[in-house]
Length: 330
Image (cartoon, rainbow, N blue to C red; front, top):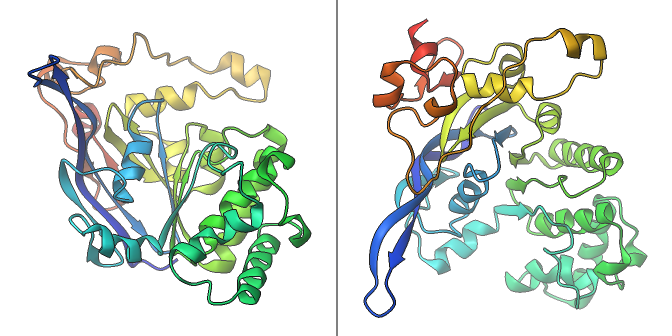
């Protein structure tokens, strides 16, 4: 794996203002969907973002793509700061960073034939020079993701869920990107189909030298495809570690609780292992708790956790990071 950074996300914040009033609106609060997220994605790597629904994973991805305005922080892609690029300049950058969406049907235009769906990026970016080369490129992309070229004249509703996701992947690959952002790409598929799509993504990564930012809430999926994993809670990263180290020795109480919630296939082991349940509800991102945001649900919380927000501290030896007063104290 190339150690050169492809994507550098530094202290990114995405806050949505909350207004009150009809005639004279005034801002009364902010929804802190992403509140200080930093990570680096190396070339050829798969970096996973996991956490409960609403923790800010997808918002982080949209901020990286500049599809949402950043409140603060910066994003560097291929060594270039793209934080404040104008829309015309971003068009060229987006050729190198594409997205595979969660819903394999909702992300496809039901009125367009598959050939035009896959080939649309070529038209938008002016790469469809003549019709013959356009058709050849679409056929090549369909073959790349395991679809027959003679399916090109069909509509999305004529395909299964797994096939529709393959169409979405082919469309994302049309511009030969270096970064693919996969936003829960298999969560809407049957379990039997999930493995096929995941194996396809792994095969494409090896063949095309792709880099993935992989968003999921299914830890078994993340364990299968990711090299490093970042765990998010309420808009912030609480732990970053390699896949093997995260599953073998999680440092943050929230990470341990997430892993404990994954059932084991052996009923004897499942019955004998200690339970680490997360009690209570996720606090509101409009009014997050002071100190560590996890402390109202953490069984190990101390007075310091209630008043002082822990920084994400990186271990210089392993490169792993954790935001927990108790973990950094030990």
